[in-house]
Image (cartoon, rainbow, N blue to C red):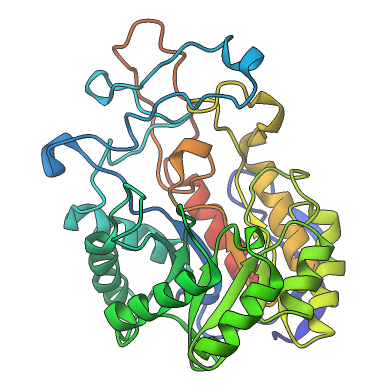
Length: 374
């Protein structure tokens, strides 16, 4: 854990804001200020397809997801985005255009952007090839590992849910990932163990997880991090359970107890009392109305970067050991820090894309805050 120092200084404020004089308690720098930081992890989605590279669109042409209540669902007719008209399923438009996650040039550019932001670990979504999921990401992750290694970044896997998922199938998934990528020099490790985040882990009981950990020897072979929504999850799955850490993930502040920044210091302290970690996750905003048009209540405006700045300050003040960034490129939910540009769609009645300047604003902000944190 970084050593803390208290200083009163006049320092540059985050990009896009004025210089201010502040008294802050921040960690001392660990390593060079130019290198990617292993204590900052960004969630990454390798599921995009383009017509040019893959012969079909995927994700950029996302449909409007139906609401679970029929009365709400009836207010939103079926709709699918059309990238051929410059219409993608996102509130922002990527500088690289609607790209393919299997395009080596794209992956190399992503690695460049991440290194520029000083993000040291990429947490890439992964699904087993034989699962019911239509997401086939292994080729993209292989490209990502190679590109990351060239710029000093590491990669670990975000174990995603699928139909029929159990603690036992996840244990097998860990074995598959270890066999495929575990020996790669760029696969991220903590305490010598390859790292795995487990999304929606709370849908499986702590008892079942504990049994799988014991029977499959997971504790010795992997460092596993559970998604936690509240203090009970942190207690059941991490403090008293088999997981090494918990993470908050969600970019909409207040969406869950653990995604509420004012709770982070207490959660970090609680996890540390059991020699474990709570990983708060920061986001530049949240807007998934391009794919969930009925979800306006959970939208969080970026406020020209102030929203992101506030979340980073909260994570630093909580004395977290690791900070997650939600996300590098989850475009559907509007949490991406990847470069975005203005763009005019030719689709009639397109609402237009949100914008920020420069395209690298949130990479620049991330770099600033990583240096404050690291």
